[in-house]
Structure formats: structure tokens, C-alpha cells
Amino acid sequence: MAFDTSVSGILAASADLGIIGNNIANSSTSGFKSSRGEFTDIYASSLLGTPGTAIGQGVQLNSVKQDFSQGNIEFTTNSLDLAINGSGFFRLSNDGVATYTRAGAFQLDRDGNIVNGSGMQLQGYPQDVEGNITGELGNLQLSTALIDPNATSQAIITANLDSRSVAPVIPWAGSFDAFADPATAPTPGMFESSTSLTVYDQLGNPHVMSIYFSKVAAADLTDPTKPNEWIARTLIDGVEIGAGISMPFEANGQIAADNLPLAYNIADWTPLDADGASNGASAQALSLDFSSFTQYGAAFAVSTVNQDGYTTGQLRGVEIDESGVLFTRYTNGQSRQIGQIALASFTNPNGLQPSGDSTWVETFSAGQPTLSTPGLGGTGAIQSGALEGSNVELTSQLVRMIIAQRNFQANAQLIQTEDTVTQTVINLR
Image 1 (tube, rainbow, N blue to C red):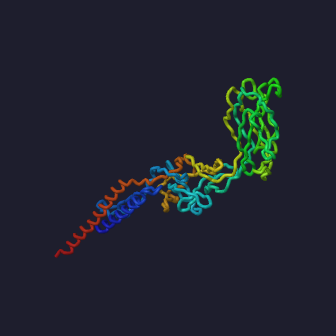
Image 2: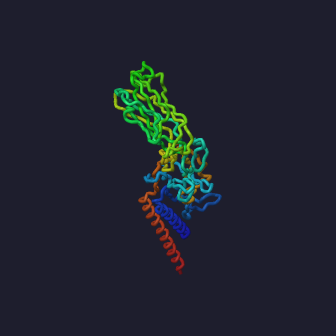
Image 3: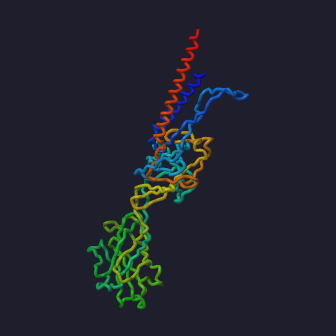
């Protein structure tokens, strides 16, 4: 019997060494969770129970349990490297089969899907056609196509016009055209201040809009009761657009209340190319909001210029916040929200079955997964540009290895001792 008992001890020590070896081998594997063997003793029993003088028949490996404690967060330079700071698992689709992982080393495949090194697709809540994140689970995918340009329809400008300015000495000639022969343009004596901004047509082509501000002489006031009046005029690509707009100010230096909101509306502007011909874009309307202008005794200064147009853009980068929301950044300065990462939690994570590639699959003992967004439902937050390291503690593993080695040697020694005893009995005369 001692032979069988010792053999079971050797097998148990070998299994323990195998578990320890696997832990040590994966001490640098991202998202790896260390394991430990749980052993139980063996006793012969019958329907009447175990006798009081029963001697154990050895040991057996009962289960291998994993330690799902948090690993160290290690920062990287890749925004698609993701770490979970807290509990939860990334959900992956392996050809339709749900798998779970803590290893967040993701990348883009050729179709723009966010995948791990084995090609499994990261799942979450994609954005619908209206730009809203829904509760329908699906694969997260980034579009690498150019985004459509947006034609400028409105610009909001905030500036101060110097109240100390005097009316220009040269009258505004009007009908300026940079493509005329000869070309004509405003001269400094026709205005006091000017600024410019870039506007975009429907094809995403940029155009320079220049705005000129001229103070109105007392004899030319539109309303003599409002002596602080300016005229704003615009040119786009050097061609004068519209007839200009009056900007009357109150004595307190702000736009007259009965003129608010003050908008300079331009209808049917036809975008031109570098030669002055139509560039193929449709005519469009523009509205310039001057409601926030002031006229104080200070130098002309532009505070803000905001316009709603932009050219086409290519995907430049991805940003992921702690709640798992994905933002894409484009070369035209725009950003888009495209979805949100889902995290899964289990009642009994130790019931998950390892499936290789640092992933697990659900089992009956693990319970049904609960899916939620990061930070909710007991799940942790997402750390972008970081990976969770292995939670293997090498020092304790080496100590366990020494103990397992001693156990193996002791059981082997017991076999040798039992062999000596048996040989002694055989040699009796």
C-alpha cells in the first residue's frame, strides 16, 4: 500500500511543479492569472463509512484554481492597448464564439476591426446610423475611409472695434475682384480694421474670407440717433460678396439692442477655383454672426472665430476614455464617437475554463455573464495606452517550487524505504 501512496504523492508533486512552471513561464504574459493546485487526501470507504483505524491511501489533485487579483498596470505608447483597472473581462468574438480575456493588446485588422493578436474581435456597443450608442452588442470597427466634408453655413466672430477710429479718408470703391483684368482690391485707406477666416465649400475646398470694417462718418449715418456705426464688408478669394451690413453700437459700446441678433447673411455664393472659374461645388449661403462685437476704446482685436465647416479627413488616431467610449480623430481636426467597449463580469470567475491565448470561455459553474459599460455593474475602469501585467509573484512561486521538489523527493525516498522493507521480508529464512 505504501507504494501506491507514494506514487500518488509523486504524481501530486509533479502536477504541482507543472502548475508552478506554467506560472513562471507566463510571468511576463499580459493579463495572465496565476494558478494553484488544490489537493485532497484519499481514504477507502464503504457504505458503513470509514473505519476509525483507516490509513489514508495518498493524495489527488482536486482542482486547479486561478487567482484573479489585479496585475500591475504597465503603460505603453499604443492607444489600443487597454487595461482593466478593477474587475471584469473584455468580451471577444472568436468566429461567433464568445470568449473573455484580461489581455488588452489590441490592434486594427485590414477591415478596421479591433482585434487581439489571434484575430478575435473586441465587442461592445457600436454607434447606429444616427450617431447614437445603443445597447445592442456587436463588434467594434473603425472606418478607415475619408469622412465627408461639411460646407460652412455659419461663422460666429467676437471682436472689438476701436471707438477712437475715424471714418476712412478713401471711399469704398466696391465690386473688388482679384480675377479681373486688372485685379482690384481694397486699399488700407478704405477701412480701419480687417480679419480673415477659412470657409469650406461642399467639396471640402478651403476659401479665404476677408472681412473689412469701416467706421461711418457722421454725415453718412444710417440713423443719426446712433452715432457709433460701422460697416462690415466681405470678400471671398478676393471677390466682393454682398453689399455689406451696418453695425450700430450703443453708447455702452455694445451692439444696439434692436439690431440683435446681428447677422450678415450671404446668399448664393458660388465657390471659385484658383483661376476664378466655378470649381463645381454648388452655390451656398453663409451667415456671419456679429452679435458679440463691441466698440470700446481699445485696439482692434479678434477674440474668437468659430465656423462650422471642414474639409475631408483621414483617420489619424483613436482615443478611449475610462468609460470605454471610443473617439476617432481625423486630419481635419474633427473627432467622432463610434462606440463603447463592453465588460463582462461573472458570479464565479474561478468557474471559467481557460481556452488558451490568454482567454477563457464561460461554463455552467461560472454563471451567466453580466455585460455592462466600464465602471458600472461592479466592473473596473478602462486605462488606454496600458496593459495589465501578469499577477505572478515570482518569489512565492520559487518557494513553492522548492516545497514541491522536496515533496517529490520525500515520496521517492518512501518508495525506496518500502522497497528495503519488502526486500528484508523476502530475505527472511
